[in-house]
Image (cartoon, rainbow, N blue to C red; front, side):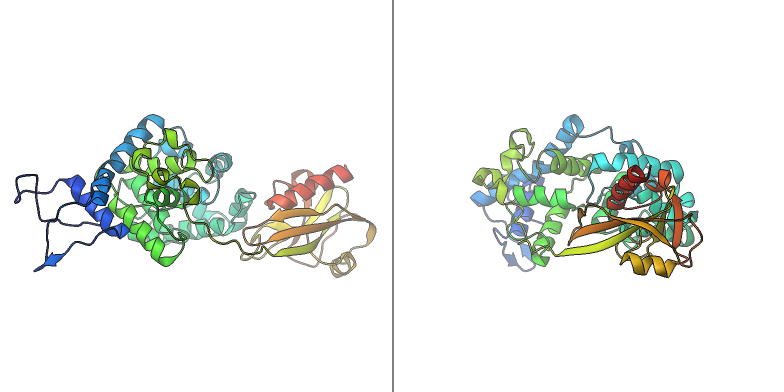
Length: 399
């Protein structure tokens, strides 16, 4: 966001305003501290207020952040060693709501099987889902596959370099598009993920829940206004690193922060109050009985529909044991009620009530979505995390 100011240096009313003053005034306007009057379409120069004098220091926001990132930021993550847009995109999607330490082995294993965009686009969706199993938020994997196919079909296998075109692709939002544009193509584009929102909310003492429309617009405007003219990769990585390592949700390490001198939340002693938290609703509780059907060597699993909970993954059938077995034409030898297992999703908690049902030799079942899987490899066959835990218990019980 550019704000022109008619004025100049001290003693030179006709000169050009220093960039720092202009950026400070722009940020002051965004934060609603002060309005600049207009006269015949021109912005009149008026003496800076104390607040604006303070905000003029924000001109060095990007400078300090870039310098800190170069010396203290993260530089050894596997996706930082490339400008390949495929690898940058893959890392950005995997890192959505997922910690770096969790992502690294998935990222490396995924690239071993799908080394480039063409390989991913040509792969069956079931195989892609299997490689995503355990990472959570499975819509990301489905959108990843759709996106690869769309780039191959519409863009001849080449990633768009335009920020807006990237944003139009499946699974790529505004902030992710900006990160890809910055890291792969060196484009000047603003990111605003959860870590960045926390940094900006604290530094500028932004009141209101970040997801509210008015607060979201203010944060995006700030993110745009703070962009440096150069070194966009270091700046973007610096924002991510600062939020992930120092300006953390709890116990921020303000004494090590390169922006501490101008952080409004720190000056006010209100770091814990920003960002403003959303009032937590009551989390619904659900229960479901999972039938673990085994012949001692195999487990019968059902592939979920592409959309919905655990879409595309393999899970045991749900329902009452007698009805499930009768529907599949299987004869029960013994049934054991196993200990319940609780698993938390974003919007609800699920209690899994597993029943281990031992049947005769595995045979074909009428349901096409069902398949027998060897117990020894069932945990790696594309199953969600809580099901993997149950399968380990079954392997121990039948081994």
